[in-house]
Image: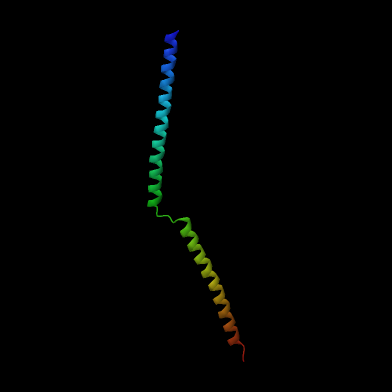
Length: 84
């Protein structure tokens, strides 16, 4: 009977060690994958969200200024077209 318990104890210890090793391998694989992914993204020369938002805001302001200037030009051209 004790021989059976020892076999089960050994089997349980082996399974525990294997589970720990599998977790270590998983963490290592995740680290390698993350490093490769970050390198790939960095090489793609992508912009950050903050940079994108800043440029988008600048474009919106430029559009608004263009609309104001267009309205001003049209008003000036309209005033020149009518005789004073």
